[in-house]
Image (tube, rainbow, N blue to C red; front, side, top):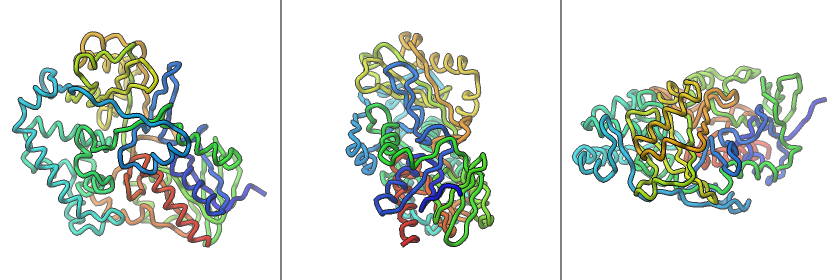
Length: 452
């Protein structure tokens, strides 16, 4: 006989860990089955340089990420503020300019962004976050890409490029690949309005964790106990009936339970074989919600020299390879760190270059923005996600035209004893760590209600 538990959880990311914790509190016995050799999923902190923890995956929380702040307090993980003082640097189809000069030169164009953000806020306020397909104008907004809609709003060329860069910074895909409804949904579930797409991300990236964000899943896992977690155990199949499940692991082991929570990104959940087969609508959904593309490149210097020059370490660029960057100083370290983001198209093209070539291109870009000192980093560390077998992309997954209206209702709806959890299924802060926690709690509570 194989192992057994009340509830089997497929996936040891933040959603799966939180689901297990919630079940234990309700007197249920969970077992987490994780394909990778580690827990954490899309959260990964790596001490690639001694004494410096590089957050290759999820990195920030925001002012209203109350669940994550509570977890940090409970587990004794310190929180510090993201550095954001000084001017940004802009390279918009022309020479590099400081923020004040850029704002003055393109004041009229930038005013157009203010108008479009107000319209997005107005539209997003009508989105039904737990059932976007029931939004009053859902059919209209889900038929058009976000890019096509923005193109009708009369933005000047520089403002249009700037808006695209900020949107891709959130979605990690071009706006031509998502529906307008999906973009509005992202604003609605984050509860901060269209400023989510502004440079500051509307309070979504204001705080960081001492020791890196992996401190949260690591300490969660420790609190659960190693006996409740199986690593290096890819799930290949799930057999289910009304009141039981059998989960088949590569290598021949099977685990029995009463319920199962699949805490994976939807496209990965769709690669598991289910018996009986899932309804066609669910399978069609997972064919249409791909993982996004992102690469993070960290350049490490002996000090954050750009601060003395009145710069905040942020760049916005149409030239690339990175479209954005920020000051990624690690608490307790004297080193200066700039994190360059390659997202969407940049991740898909430049991210496939040999690592040394990519690193040099990023350093060249940083030198254009922050001066000759940027040309000689002590270390360059990068993290690419599409090649990771058990992730296949980051930060999140996105729906294109007709995705929400035709298939969205299958995203988190239980199928018999199968419940779904991942940040994509959250109704608050979807695509963030906060959303992963909310989704894990919801799925666990669905299980508890079913078992009770």
